[in-house]
Image (cartoon, rainbow, N blue to C red):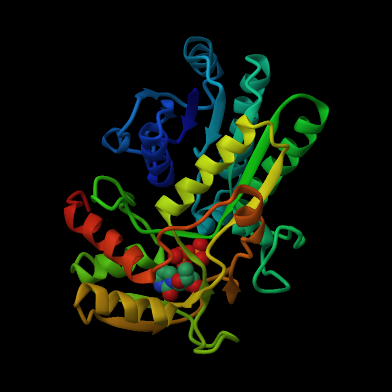
Length: 325
Ligand code: UDP
């Protein structure tokens, strides 16, 4: 079976490409390399191309003839989406439509979409299930809701079936430290923590200690990137087994506060790095934890790395190898 992966040279996409290759799928990565790295593509070929380039995209569909498409290529930085919304709507929404359009033209009826917990905004209850209203609080989250809505309408009108996976806090790296978070400007807590432990950053800032949570810092559901990859593989099998279009939350179902993550990072790395309490960061919900019952029950997903220390350790080992900071 052939799977076309957009954004396969990026952080999450590259882990899924690895998992697909190791499971015997034929994989082709389509990535404009704006943030992705060719070295991160461990399996299959890479075509450097942009989703706005519909001619190139069609050539890839025509020659590779995918049986399924996984769509990772998107911008992901929330504050940037507030400053430059058009950039987000154009890439995350318009370019997704280009890709879906090519799927329809080439009769590729299986589509897996990278969505996000940001679609929920500030959820009314924790843990959040898939029925919670979609009230995103920034253009990034809205651009993802727009694609979900388009997929829902397009699949209702024709043969396309899709799975939308709403990611919670994806973190960690490949067990053998071959791939991992590779962005210089990464802002994610665990990446920042291991970079600080390695002296690549002078200190870690905690964004707010006055939230209505047990220790005053925000709570998040950190999922290891290989478990998230596995969610993609079970979703793909589900679509190959003629499963109907579905949406699933991807997280472990329990959270850690920022302080807990920082303490764990100090313990795992063995470095008592500097931490500063600063003010709240705009747009941070106090708590975001997935109810992933649906993913577990419908697709039989069983996480293998629900272990904060393992997540931090793999991120740390990867970060030690990463010299391009
Ligand atoms: N955070 C922090 N310091 C940092 C990075 C993140 O205090 O240097 C906090 C952030 O405010 C949020 C949590 O850690 O409450 C997780 O943030 P991250 O950017 O990793 O993911 P998000 O939940 O925003 O998708």
